[in-house]
Image 1 (cartoon, rainbow, N blue to C red):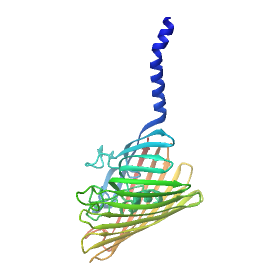
Image 2: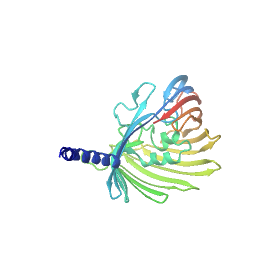
Image 3: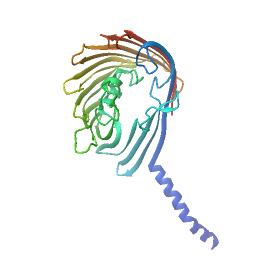
Image 4: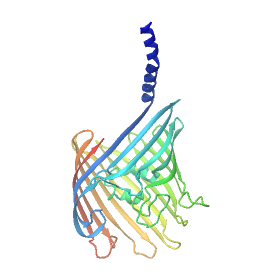
Length: 359
């Protein structure tokens, strides 16, 4: 009887072990990240790539792709329904500090559900403009701190001095707090809508945002169109759009984007920005890729002379493995009508060399 008794006593443990294995198979959590650092030398820009009267040499983080650490998870709820979450922090690996001192998960903090009827997510997440730029930009948002589509088209560094939408910042509106995003895909077409609450007492409009986008991905063409509008705490508005196409050319592809926004900067003043970009990716060998993006920025402000700049950024990337690559980068900027500021150089250049590892 002892073997039978021992077997019966062990049955609950076997059942628990089986249940634990089943739960583990139905859900997963992934730790991921990008570590990117390089040596950079510039003329006419400071270590943060701002316009400057002098030159600079430095080690920078995220020259190719923004360094980050993230956690994402998914749980199968049955019937084709899944629960999901994502938490992501930007990092400056040259100093070991987080990119944002006030928001630890500054790059994303949301949860949601995904099923046959689409995906809904709630929390801090990219705007639809940022999603569109990520799909259409010639450099696929490489060098985010210098990329004009990231900075101006997607409003990461709009230089307007006011918080538009619940971004938590007066310098950029690339991501929004308190937001709800819904996406539905049919074939190669994805439609998205987004609303961000301002979370302001006695007001549904202050710091709020609304947007919609449509994206198509096919073998011969990729295209995206996005529109969003944002409110300040005083009721000023910013209205913006991003459009772009990508077509294959031989083994590579060519990207074209056109975007713009109009922002009320006061009750009587406006700022308008327009960005036209052209470029693409060309494989030179199975391991070596050339990426080039050219950006033309035009700015108009009430009671100011129109200005802007032309910027070209190029990358050579050599893949060491599926997760690691080394790169060379070169950029040149020609400022128009004193856009760079009084007393500063009329042109800027930069050279970088670095390594990126993904995990």
